Image: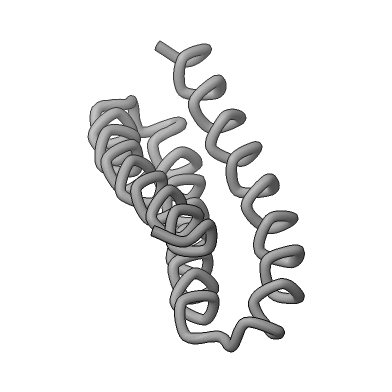
Length: 98
């Protein structure tokens, strides 16, 4: 398996993990009191949108040529770090509210 394919598979697995995390966060948000429920539901919605954008970018990486792959990978990794940070922040926010 090529390095490129290993990278794509690893990112796809992480996106699946984040899908599961989104479901857990949605469940937590739905159980919160009305004063904060909407705030957390909005936060989960934003995470879901960003995760879906990353899925689209991953699909672009899969379909890219070898020369475009290297260029796209850099932008993908920057966006990936931002999404990872957003998930960490959301997780922390939800834990602090428990």
